[in-house]
Length: 327
Image (cartoon, rainbow, N blue to C red; front, side, top):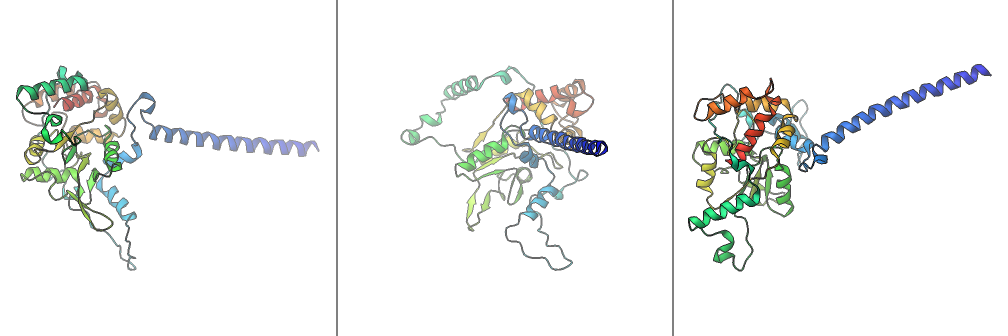
């Protein structure tokens, strides 16, 4: 009798240990997922979905697999033969590290401008317009009776992890044709880069979408328009990018949504180490290692910043972000 009770008690204890272990590991996984989907939320950071925004940086091969698995009109493959959809026109498979020469870039040295609030910036902006007798949009006759609308296209120059996906969904929610990272023709950044090098409008060849009903609609809003490469291209960083936008879309709207630079730097450097390496010395050379005016300053800043690898040089990326905002 005692032996039976002892055996039963031992079995119960063993089961309790197993259940406790399973609960512990499930708790770890839940904690990990919570951290993944709520990065910076408790600190007042922007509402971003890290899991979804990771596709911003994912190689085109990953996006290719995703497109394959989500094909709406799937036709059965013949035995022994893959039904593979060809890559879009603007795809990074057209470039290699050996064949792509890094493009020159420039950012101003950070000044007191970076500490301006939105209200202070707008006050200076309005004063500058008035100084040159340039009418403000809301003061023009055509808007006296109608609502003021943002001229199209709207081009978002936010860096990744600065609400690029949130803003794209915001406009899409209002029924405006908005794209994030890519269009049906491929990566927006590659499209804009190739057009700039040919002195063409930035969105030529990737400025429409074909709806499910077969209607071709113009794309009015784009966000997350850069890529780390190869090829590496950011219209707001690389020389000539902003000028090409202004030349071909003089009535367009440039939108820059920013966040606290320190929170941004901690977010992006803690997100994916490979990204920062590509930004630094493997593709973009945002470490100042290229030849050209102003590169000495950034090269010096990069070397002197604390941290032995690019993702640990948080203070350097804070300055880089603020210089981008200032530009």
